[in-house]
Length: 75
Image (tube, rainbow, N blue to C red; front, side, top):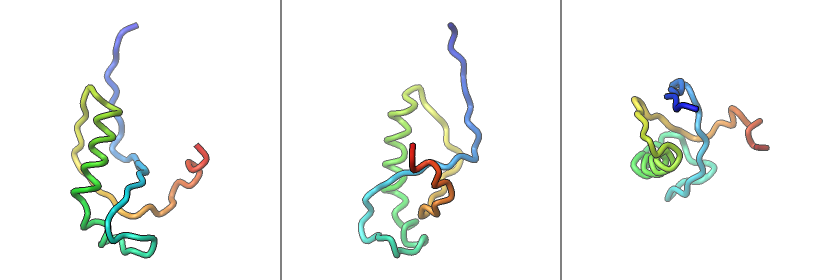
């Protein structure tokens, strides 16, 4: 069986729980976005663990979880 390269579409949502200082359930999305360095570092750590062969990320946006895909909670 040979190896194949797989490209993932850019419109994917990842969920991630992360302890961020001075952020709670009532925090505004803008305030969470001020912690981009911490959020990106954890996201990058997880991606490196999941894709040791490497990856390329052209854009990076994040915000508070809006519960858009709550059906994944049971997985």
